[in-house]
Length: 176
Image 1 (spheres, rainbow, N blue to C red):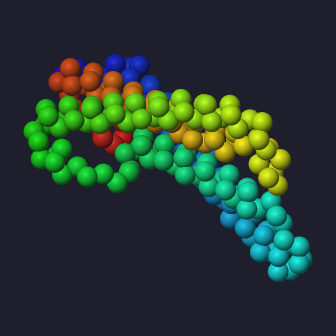
Image 2: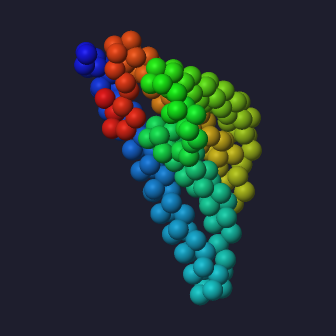
């Protein structure tokens, strides 16, 4: 059995780092979200002056938390999935099904990214109320998610194919 090529291991480490960066950004957004709601409660009940921008910022932050977390979840293979039938097949058929699933997810990510590019361009002239930034900043989170899903699953499909050709199985957790 051959070891994986060095470029594959380096690429896998890079993808792990990108996934960790997504989770870091989503975590920071979550902390900011909690802090802004704390400011909302303080402003409303202590200062008697409700900050009106909190709701719009919360909607924006929830988009980034959701989409970046989803992309990282795709890479980390932590999404809920029904694998009963796939796992009941033999190792060879199961490996082929995993490749097909990754290809379908990569195509979905590419379509999502392309559609979001159009939305991003369309929303650039519309401003988010209270925040006075382009609506495209909200769409950017979905665009990033689509691109990340495409990269994560597309490369994973390539790695699975290479491992299959070498007579190895692609490790589900921990990378190469």
